[in-house]
Image (cartoon, chains in turn purple, cyan):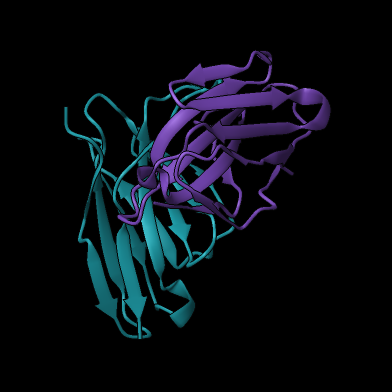
Length: 117
Length: 115
């Protein structure tokens, strides 16, 4: 069975600090996909990134960067120079290849990030 | 380009009642998935519809049922509501594929409160 663990529940930082959100996953499959979503107070989940299990290259998008390490089954997310608008709940999710259907997402419990001015 | 829309935004019901939630997928998408998100938890997969058929189902009782229409929109029905059904119900749409890489895009959700 697949599982996603986000051990941090709440993180509070001051604006302009860097912050890393941790994600550890479990799966028996060799092919899988990892995702990060952001959920602002409005409730809608906003897609941030997707990585496949064969691509361990780190990715950077503006102030966001992701570190994928298969050896430790981790897919961590770093926000550089955090801003108040980054305050939200962040979810890591895992999908596996299935037959006859889109793969369901298995989510972690989420990390609440508060960025103070 | 319209995103995923859901209705209603909020709903209050009493135990034992039945409820229907609606979802319209993002333009160009043909697959709809439903998730339940309890307070302080991550979303839990309920089921997924493609070609008007239920393709996958999570660990939810038969009280949870769904439907997909020819225009790809979908409904989630919950019968015999329990207090524990109070949650944010999220609809996600995607383009069908079996590679696992299909990104699901979420709607704003329907907040259901059962009294």
